[in-house]
Image (cartoon, rainbow, N blue to C red; front, top):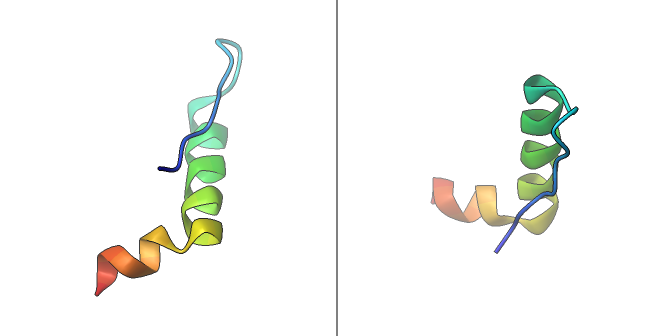
Length: 34
């Protein structure tokens, strides 16, 4: 399962971009599209 750790001071847009990068790297996003 893919997860990211964010701090309270992190911006939401940055956290979402980081999460999307991790999803692409893990290949999970491609599996969901099938």
